[in-house]
Length: 283
Length: 339
Image (cartoon, rainbow over all chains, first blue to last red; front, side):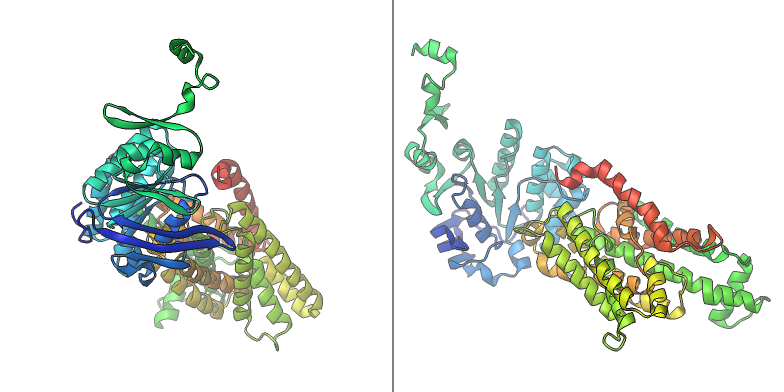
């Protein structure tokens, strides 16, 4: 999929958020958020429920209006982009869901071509080609004619990732794509996203599992109470004190095969531990 | 579902429309032969007399049956297309003009202009505006914090429908005897008074709406995914939904102001068309138009030939349609309730 001419060299800032505030009525959810989003990186957004990361996401995608502060994409404020133009620059992968009508996988992925279609509601030969290669990149070509609603949750999530690829944007936002999936599918989705980013896409992913961020993300941004707590290289940012600050529980970081690994310290305490662990440790 | 299967589906539906029209022209009290029917139509269109036919046959075919057949086609087309458009842009497989209160709104508007012609001289326009008010009130009542649950929209549509039906009741109460008769017959839904003027007016609205909705078929596909996804795919959901609802309501309101309330067609037809052509609205919209035309042709022929007296068309479609909704809820209930 080297067809995208908007792909930027990795490391260059493509989205710049400056002093972003957002309130629902009188309840302020985001406080002066400032953040640089770099091209070609996989960026994890970690924060407890209600931390404002979904709101931040929705502001970046233009779903919510910028109330105070600025969001720039490619140097221009995102309000200056029309809906269609913005959709050709930013793709959105929602959590998998069942639409009201039984579209096929190919039809779902084809909808990603919408921002590139002319006035005629017809897919061009190039559109079809991009759809086919998006299906292939995600490894679901064999499902193309299946009914999307009859797939498993993991497969549906893959289809939504393929749709975002078909959109040919330089940046993809993913909203907790693994939260309703089993372990095997969680890893599959992450590997697919990692593969996609390695071919030059940038991705911002909302996620609840600090391990996923440590294993797969280049960078991490930690959000709490509508403020950025820390941002930078994922393995430097996701630390014991930060996680404690987020979740209020003691967590420990260790390494296995030179890879960092987070676990709750409480599994070592007798009151929470399995009885056989206690016997071995002699607590 | 490939291109070939869809194009053959459309062609078969076209053939069915033609076949049902011919059958509908033949069926009736008076026997007019196949040759006779075409002789008359050919004569009327070209002025060449191909054979002998009587004056009475000419009146039956040209003044009574043909306008009625064309009005059935136009009404079926309008209701089928409106149902498909509403289902798509409200993401709700249970809605149609009747359930959304659109039909009652249009009926109230038309009744208003029948009883107070000095105040509301434009019957169709009043019907359209009241129908538009009905659909917007239903939709905004059912929408809480940006979510519009399927069942909530059905319920609010029923409430609004009841409200506008009450308004029709008031009009009936105020109406003079001759007007009362007119309103009552027209409300039952039927094509018995079909004239060439009705055909022209309904086709002049129905066909452009059909073309417009086919052109917007892709947008309808995108709208079925929900507002945030639609926006992330480059579509402004509010504007798209607004223009599509206005177009669908225009077709439905004109149909109601001519033919009365013909319920359930807009519910059944999109479902059946989806089974034949799949959910892509670029195909589904024309498919629903053709299938709606076939369905109303068949129902209307049954309505006027089954017994010696005519059964109102709206009653025939309700007898078939209401059980269909029950079946739909039983079979597809889980998906519809959102589990």
